[in-house]
Image 1 (cartoon, rainbow, N blue to C red):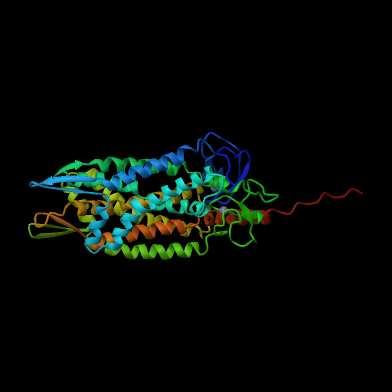
Image 2 (image 1 turned 90 degrees about the vertical axis):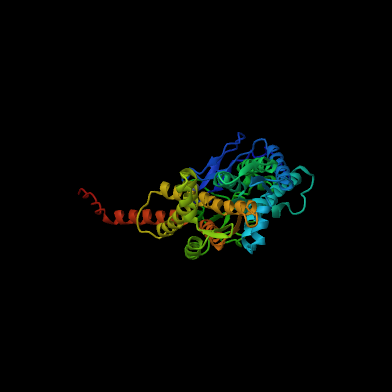
Length: 439
Ligand SMILES: [Zn+2]
Ligand SMILES: [Zn+2]
């Protein structure tokens, strides 16, 4: 049943995906996000002018199409001119026997963003049409799952870093696709921030059904309820573990969350060795071959006094992946710790690890761009090294680990500790003496 864009006049009871607290969300139409009062996680963005979102998605798709048709960067060196398209960044990797890396690049900068934008347009067409269009529910289920894997903005920043890296070596030109792709990345970002998944599900399937006697200010679990992280529907725990509103799989807590995080972190740590020991790219110039590891790349920038770029590459490629592994390891320990913790800082750490992970792909994209540009035979040829694939694996495994971590486990632990200390202090209190009865 398609609903009007501003139909949500109902006061909602929504579970927080990060701390499990049920909160009351009053109807608002100012487009401002409503946050969880306990952990400040954004719960939902109330309806505003929703015509803008599909218009933005369509514009982004148009800009992406133009970016694929025209050249992206060009350069001239020793009288030789060359231009690359966005797809060349993946194509040249595939040519040099790195098909997996080529798939990662093309999927994260073109395929997944395009599917996301097409899905947004299709769902909004479905909402505007008298009957629901086929596949709109399936696409609505996949929208939030695609979101973390879209990296067009990271690629756009990587292009700027590449420019600084090669500006001294050749005369660089920013061609038409550079501007259209940057516009696409920006509008994609705005479209994503405007998406209101819970509101979208309400418009597709009607208002959420609130279970009777649900109370705000208590966790869903303590009321025998389970909250759907995608559509916000609360339902009794004993029901089959599929949301009866959007049909997504439901978990009271992510099954084996901590075990999965540890397994992914160990895999990421193992991938760190080839990522930093093997070259990320190999430069061949006039018969001389020079492999370059991530750290060697940072040192090269430092030698040329390009310390801002050295800092960006060092932060993205060394500090962030290692920091993320340490932070996730700490959060897993915190979920089992017998000590009261400052939950605000724990949640800030969790959100930072979740947000920052994809930015580590900068160095991989820089390599993809440089390899696509520098194919000048004997004069100068840059080829990708095995370190790039290993480094992408580090980024992907740490991102998967962050998604597998269930922050509600830390809140559960803190609640258990509070209840335990309350029981202990109640036991320590001396029994009160009853007043003597007067004869
Ligand atoms: Zn919360
Ligand atoms: Zn649901």
